[in-house]
Length: 263
Image (tube, rainbow, N blue to C red; front, top):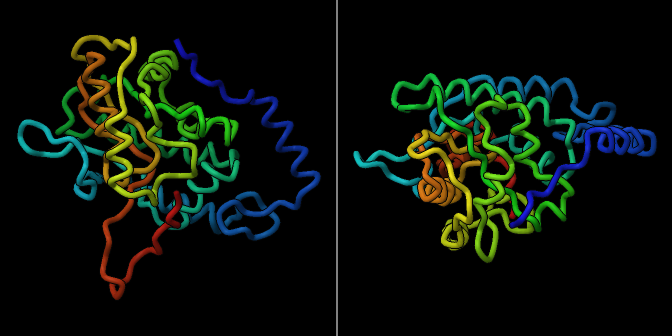
């Protein structure tokens, strides 16, 4: 039985950040402006970008479809466009763990919003099942980004690390060993999705479940987790994500600058 990797202790992380601040000049994790690890302008921009959770399933063609033909409902904290995209990228791939507070709190608010959606039956009492992190990615980063974010979620509803770790990919991982997956192709995500299996994880029979991820692209990752949850005895009623990638738009149409493509 595999044990879930543990994140570095808060004391160790705080010491490392303090030492880094002594050696390196502080710069904004989002825009690289000197003087602040998160400058006032970017902090204000993030607050605005995360202020209105919205439904995002219409932009994710690979999400599982219910009996009535509707895709799995997904509530997103914000659009994957700057400054949120830059913040997510910095948090996931550049060790900007000081963004955990603002991003984790936004994820928590989005869970609360999803629980109030009238077309998510069972959502008010649903268990929260985050996408399992990959061991390769953990070794590369030294932490599991989604696990760090979910620290802000209501503990009584969050499944244990032991259950989460048993919802594992077979040969490869959905997250892989590379950087953030927002720029990977749908075909690659579908191939990874086929590798899911459930080991010994069991959920209460028929228990409503809200899936949790950081970035929604095509929905293939959530579709794979939904299948794993069903095989473990749970009933996926919806999902919550920190950021949702917008569908391609006309370049002449005004709108927010899209986030960086990575992976």
